[in-house]
Length: 359
Ligand code: AGP
Image (cartoon, rainbow, N blue to C red; front, side):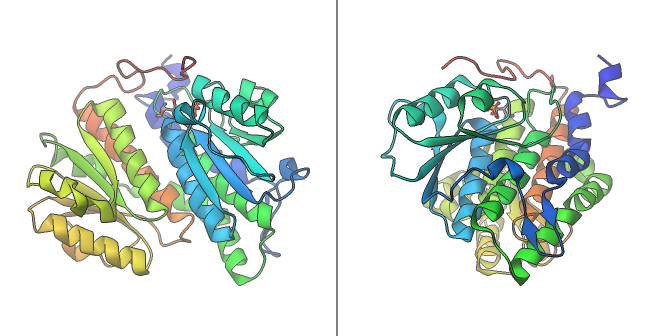
């Protein structure tokens, strides 16, 4: 087993470090930088749907939330559903609704049930998966492979990053976007593997977690495409550290959870870009800072959150749709190093399985 880890202490750490390669594989042959266009051959037979419904579980559900955001930006209405809820209470399906199952393994029972339910109701289905010839890949009308390579660690890492990239490609391919904005996104996608390598090489997470080993709980906040990153940061943290962590849309804190915020609850704030969302998230950072919470900002430096943070985990400045991939890598390392310091079973956390094949 040690050989399979290529010298890394855990599969999870190995897979975190494999992400630049995984993303190169996912992007290979799918970007035309000159034209600023994305080509995904697998989607050739797919008509642009009027609406998209995502079904997924766990980490893949967070990726699906990101998918909703990218499709909305592209002008296609989309919603995401927890697969376990969809199967027993499906929403109305319109004439040209595409139902997309986001599932790394392609074998998650809840997701398969939701896709079967959608299919039985006449929807066209697409599997966004990592595993060639998996059940989801075989049963859906269309397949989009994320090309991450095998993932052994129970905690999904590189497959989440690959899902985010595949969903960005998916939305760009569906609406055939062109022009300056599209060229900028394609250039950011092209640079993403090396930007991610930079984050992995330079990350200071191992030092930062040492300051917070005995905290009461850990909160993660973000807005827009950084909201699913906050949720995923908290899920990863819970899975492998066994510590209490929660992710929130930054604006929701003041609607209840702020009551839990004290000097014993570090808040990881994902703040990128220079826009309304970043400014509002900084407002939320000030709210927790005023309650003595330590703040760890995951930021590209553009947002200007540094002055309110106790620690900063930097990412390179990039496109709004690629920044979440970089921010997430920092949070993966936060969870990993915290779990390692606490001596947890990182690759096989208690009570969890890599693929959940029961409903
Ligand atoms: C994430 O770290 C977990 N392994 C889990 O939440 C997982 O994402 C979920 O069970 C869905 O799995 P899938 O992508 O294979 O469908």
